[in-house]
Image (cartoon, rainbow, N blue to C red; front, side, top):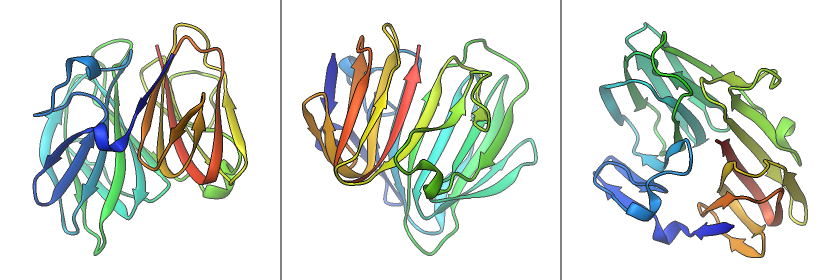
Length: 232
């Protein structure tokens, strides 16, 4: 099954400094048909105004992956970490037994990002944060594993879940294939561009929930940037 989730159908919360679209129920937005997708609990499409952001707040027992699409985000946390993640790059915060963090757009331009939450395999543990650069050239025409809980995914940021976060850029007319296997929950979103997935036409910032499909095939109608989560 493949369920198309157009950008216009997503939940929305506007707070002046933040314009957030929710692929799944989150905060003030609730849709019982879109509570989560397997262990994938949250996929927020956030636009953060310049010189604003999320003030310090706590999390625990959640793997939080931030994929920056435009601009940059500056992270601070109670572990003493501080770092700046730019467009195309990724940061992971494994909340473990508990952490307090803040995320700010300290730039002069709008920041756009995907914020992805995945439930961990086990609760507790020491929290940690890490960021990595994933150049566009390395993702051209192929899916690259950005974050993963699988030992064989060398170079990916570690998470405490039997899940993967992957990214790719696909030129117009090109295609990307991914075999997840039966019983897995796959979710795909377009950071930019358009294309088709299983006969469905997807546009920029659309999502698609996939289950019990041996292989997904995305074909780009125009140059596209896609992000995929494969979760139990």
